[in-house]
Amino acid sequence: MLFGLRMKIQMELGLIAGSLCLAIPFLSRLPRGSDWVAQYLPDEGHFISGTLLFGAFAIIPAIVVFTAALISKSPFYLPVVISALTAIAMLAYWHHDNDLAADAQAAISLIFIPIFAACFAIVGGAVGVGLQSATQLLRKRTEQNADPNA
Image (tube, rainbow, N blue to C red; front, top):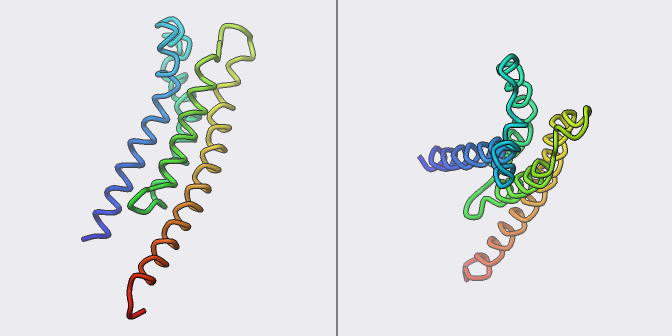
């Protein structure tokens, strides 16, 4: 029962963090207005293919963050927290000022931004795993010192 509850929490954390990674490209553009957000929406003739193309690359950091959630352990869930914060910060930073109308090659950035954000999320997840291991080791040592029979 405990394993099932822990896995459920990990899945929920992963889905929430992954959903944020998918929404951040649009949310980060909202302060500049609806025209700025509309740059990321495909035109009517290519709506399905454009959405699939954007989604295929936008899901890359979401998968990394979801994977970090699966390797996270309570009580802090550090890998998913650090990985998600890193990915969300990088996605928001790069998508906020990405002007697709500025250059004919600017649309290529929609491919590279998620890949770079996923790389940063992997590094953040690795730092989280290291911190998680350090806190677990510290907790074990503290419990051994507190237990007189050990």
